[in-house]
View 1: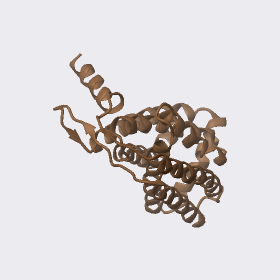
View 2: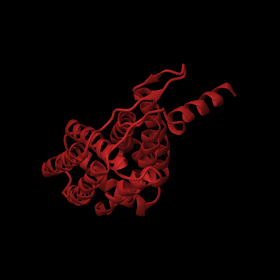
View 3: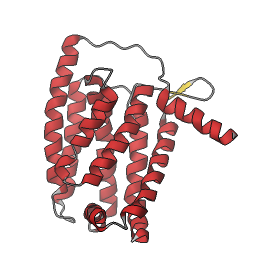
Length: 239
């Protein structure tokens, strides 16, 4: 029972109860942020679709993926100020939220790896995932890992940083998640969109609690790097 209570307290601190903060942004600054974010979302979605359409093993895939990441980063920076955020610790103090982000990323990774065992049994779902995994199989793994890490940071800077701040407070969590998922639609892989929804909801909740992007970045990197290295063997086991 004590472990369950600890787990509940962790979830409440990391995903439910916001850390107090006071920030203001002028109407003109908010309008500018929204214009920049809107243009970046459209360009990034098209760029991601084009990158994933590149033949596995083609060096152009890495360049295209990094190009999309640079687009997200540029959009985030140009849109306005970004914040690292702060998390509440068990003692009542605050921290940067890196440990919370890591642990939440591990939890999401575990759920997805269990789900992969099921997906591997369904041919219509297995095929698209195999196509995504081919980019890791046929390329240099360290390069894929680097691209994955850069993209994870870039996506959080933009979607949980700039985009989240551009939306009205009452819809910024769901709205940023919906647009994050929509940006993957051009890839044609529905499971990638599903993953974006799950990851987006988790990191948006962190963004709401911490007020910044550092915790979401930690979760995103933990999940994405774990999927890169652990999904292929788990998928093979399921098949």
